[in-house]
Length: 405
Image 1 (cartoon, rainbow, N blue to C red):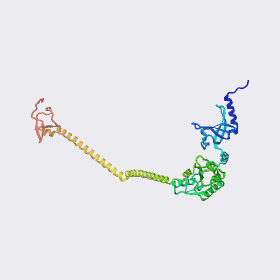
Image 2: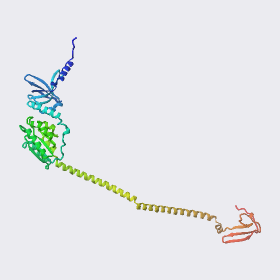
Image 3: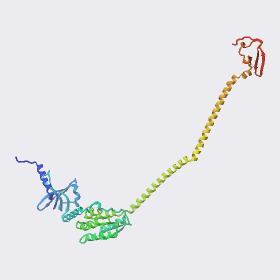
């Protein structure tokens, strides 16, 4: 049975054929622009036509960097891109990567070939880029003496830093002999010993700017021992020396902004740094003053004289406390003594005698004892009676028992 394929399979097969064709993947197509539409997504849809036919084209938004002008119907252009099939519509179209106005095609192709050659030689490598000096004193400029580029550079330099010296080499920047003139200017300023160099000119067509796409000029910039800023044309213009130079500026005015340090901003920065330094120094001094005072206080506290004075004060306080405790103890002891004295006073025989009482005793077997009962004496016994002012020697004449309730 005959094989049957789907539309998708056929379109995919045809697309694969386009993909495998090297010529169709890198092709330049020349024609007139028609049906040009800028889509809101950023894509550009248009057709290229000539007297024999038409081809659909699209440039996606991500490729818009390859377009340096605004496209419109009727323009003659050269489109670089790849031919492939749009499977949903089953139609082939040209996917544009770069678009140039017709007439620039040969020069552009020459530009691309030289760019690729120099890149393969490593002349665009970042490791060969020299650092741009931050405070250049002498700046060499290779450009036309009557162009707008040098006037812009001079005006910006005067505004930013009147103390920077500009040294102009009046080079021929377009036409026959331009590349030799630019190379001589680079070598002359390098020999003079400038700190930094600006090489460039104002805007123009690709033919006008072509001197800066020459290999001789690119090699002079690459081999220059002085850092070089390229400043060719407008922001959208790109030349070979932009890739070789140590720094690319989109315009000569921007190159001056990058090369000339702002003296007045520098002064303001110095003033700000001075204020900040003074503030930090004052804070440091305050901090160290506090530390010194703290150490002085600690030193005074740990000084032997201070310690002796504290010990003496401690001893004096302890002595005062001991004395106070002793006084209190003596006072309490005296009070207790008075209490006991009063109690003893109430028990003293002499006190009783003074109150009118008498104390009687007798001697028995050579021992004296107080008489507390009538049973201790008999009639005729000798007794001694003590009264307040003396004693009485008496004899018992009789005893009589009595009960006192």
